[in-house]
Amino acid sequence: MCAIVMNVPKDIRTYCPKCHAHTKHTVSLYKPGKPRALAVGARRHKREKRGYGGRGWPLQTKFAKTTKKQVLKLKCGKCGFIIQRKGIRLRKLTIGGSD
Image 1 (cartoon, helix red, strand yellow):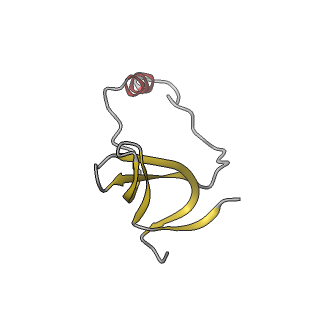
Image 2 (cartoon, rainbow, N blue to C red):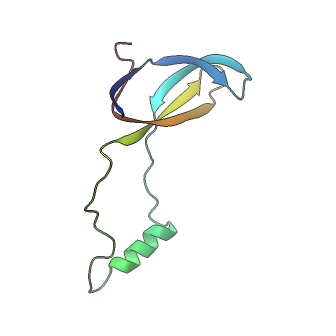
């Protein structure tokens, strides 16, 4: 069963593998970057779509999952090294909420 809402503090004191010590880390949410237009998959997808014919990609009809995994980015306050925490399946994640 997944939690619906989770409050995470803005700062967490946790282990930094670069400093080899527990330091203060600032918490942010991981967001994927812009997809590359010249990547192999994008070029292949463009080639499949061109011209006449049917749909060049599968249209998803069955949606089994209602949530996505939220990944936390922790930035060390001492050295600036960024580590990522394992994704948690949540509906809503609040950073710096009433926690």
